[in-house]
Amino acid sequence: MKASTGFLRLVAVFSLVVPPLSAGAVLVAAFTGPYYQPLSRSLSVLGEEGAPLAFAVNLSFGALGLSVLALGLALDGAILAGGRGGVRMLVMAGACLVGVALVARDPTHPALLALHRLLALLAFGSLALAPLLLVRRLAADQSWRAHARPSLGFGLAALILLLAGGVLFAAGHLRAGVWEVVFAGLSLVWLTLTAARLARGAWRPSPRAGRAG
Image (cartoon, rainbow, N blue to C red):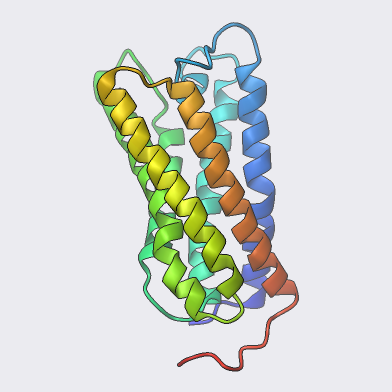
């Protein structure tokens, strides 16, 4: 079912604005005081109880999650009907990021800390798989076909980075902060490019002729 133009425009703007704002909030928090050690500490440390800008960081995680979730729903209505695996991965990633914001990192409560880490891991995995699972659907839609190859590249890079992170973690050599910054940066670039493509189609609808049924 095709989504309304108004909905697509709203999601496109939201998904274009939120990622850079979220990244900016996290960067400001990272450089506020000596609390954060970027080489060894996860970005989630910036949102734990007692961190200088914990509320702003968790708010940015939540807003980013909502933008990813909304982008997934919008793509399902904007791209030619096909497999929904990629859309589902985006929705899951968005929901997990919202969960990361709501269940902030808390070392004093092991159960909550474990849940926070599980949600973060699910978000990372979903963000890595989403571009790959969207490739065939993108390629089948004439107006989105040009976005298929970049999505394949970003997805493969994210998956390789995810697997490398697992190997480094198992070997005890993972620098969590650096790894998360690189992975998040890669994902944010793809999300922003996808939102930009959605915006272009929402304001200048592409011809739908020639689509397969």
